[in-house]
Amino acid sequence: MSAATSRDRTREGVVTVHELKRAWLALERGQFRQRRIGGSRTVRVHPVLQSRAPGADAAWQAVEPVLPVVGCAGSVGASTLALALATAASSPDTGAGRTRVVECCSVTASGLAAATTAELGPHSSGWVQGTRGEVLLERVVDAVRAPDEVPLPSIEAPYAVSLTVLDVGWEVGLLLENGGWLSDQLRRAPHVVAVARATVPGLRRLEGVLAMLDGTSVTAAVLEPRPPIGRLRGLRGIESSMGARTRELDRDGRVHHILLDPLLAHRGLDSQPLPAPLLSAAQRLLAAATAAPNPSAQTKGRPQ
Image (tube, rainbow, N blue to C red; front, top):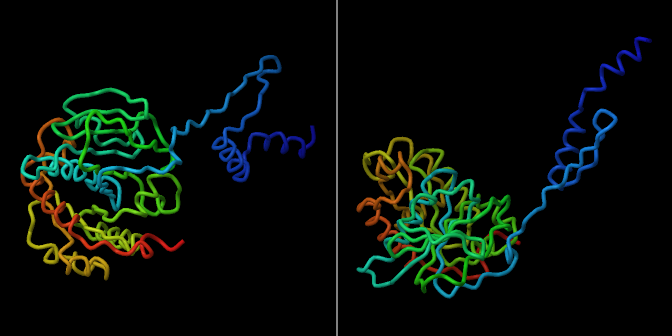
């Protein structure tokens, strides 16, 4: 056996980066081939069928007002605030009646799975429904890989709702570049609540989200899990990290510094009642969001 033949056989098991990329693209597209193992048995690998939710590409026309809540990064407390806003809006003091939270992320990223006090089970529209007092909670049944795979919110709720809070659950830039009803809702929403953490990176993320939502009325909620040291601009290192859009929002009184209960931050959402200070802060934020000016439709969202 020649040295060249030996080198060729040695390289038979080497996979180039280009081949790996092609294999990954084929996997994403569900393209596979039959492979003969040991010269005798053929294994057929079936592609995973992409299950698009019924009506995911359709437009959603809600009868009630819709308030999207977006997290400027992952695990900043957007789901907690979305639930607090819906709970505050459904309190007897407001007289608004029952409300709903629609959690739009994949089932693998759900933050509301343990938040219900009564489970209603899967709905034919592609959602699992549950209740928590006067709040209806809907979360996705299956795993979804992109925003345009999220099913349309149910139109057969157990009861009429006066407000739907969308726990968006996707990165804003990805949503604005995508199609589907959820992206359309974010582009057309008269008001959006953006949630960030009271850290230097958190406020930088907030500034980026405000830039992407230029022309949309935004109310910002900055969550701080520790006892507040002072006002937002008084925290060391925070003031210098506030961008021009965040400063303008703060001057307009639309940056709300919310203290997040340490125990709630540690255990996450469950069936226990939300802390009263969080609900009070959510009530104030809700009033500010609904009272915020509504920009012209021609200037909303990113330029097309």
